[in-house]
Image (cartoon, rainbow, N blue to C red):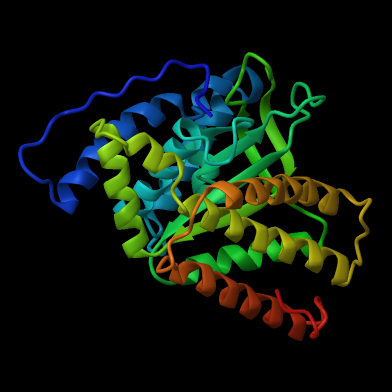
Length: 314
């Protein structure tokens, strides 16, 4: 859903048919300007955390990036993050009630969150709104870093813990004035294989060039269903782990309630989208099946520790 902050996009025409690299560079240049301006900025929280504490967080970020084991974001992953942000906002991929904002650099580096999604629902006012943390990945197979993120999420769920965000500001500050840390937010990973990302890049480029029919093509693209299915898979996995794990959480426990309300939203959107969006017969994504296999591996490794029943598979 388009936020209340006015958005403008400058389009620079290109002669002839652009190559993939030209399309990538154009999208990065334009969408970086748009979403870096709107992203959550740590220095805006000085009245909450104090100048000194924020400066220390900046130092922690720089120290983390100097670590030999630090893996910087790839150009392709950044492209997916920005295209996903823009598709959620401009093309309402997850409905008109879904609003998104780019996470602060601190929460990106230390919490593994690229995008924070907030659902504006009737009867839910102020900061009492369902939220979802999203980490965007690209490539044909989930990386080792993705495997580690999955294990951290599930290990937290088994203890009754969900995601945390230190620097939160609503994408709609007119309705939600809260600024500060938030806890117990479901976290998921969404990904796309390389050929699928190439397809999304081409569609986004055409939309930015205002090519005839490109807005409809972007709004009705089947990848929104793929992403919803990935989120659905993960939330179902997490809820099952919470209820079947060593703590045996119940439906009335917060770790289940928070994830179930997002799952209900996603299931409703999927039901609606599947009626109106055709998935081409050839359309598959390796990331979907690889994500399921990786979750199975993570759950089974935790099962060996006795934390999840061996009978369970995601």
